[in-house]
Length: 130
Image (cartoon, rainbow, N blue to C red; front, top):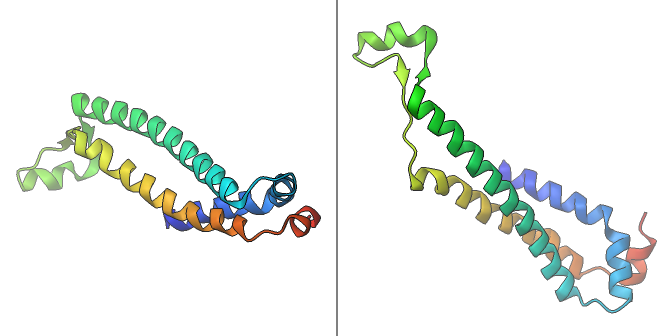
């Protein structure tokens, strides 16, 4: 689901900037360079989001690691099975980096299709696009 959302976002960015890409190609930018530019742009946006997400996630996890997460109404049920009504998550390097690493790979793969779609643009047709 995440991959399709990202793919849709990048495709819409390509459609909105078709005229811009047509002008760039008309003044001599090669399709390969445009593809490279789009992949760098999508990777940069992803890395910025991942870094912010890792920092926010680690701070939130650290808070609940220290104070615990009260499970509220189900604590009575859990106490019948010998489980505490408060959960204490553990922060580790693997848990902090595995999810964001998967998102980075999925985002890069999802950005490939729109980036290669730009290669097929013809400058004159792209500049006519509305």
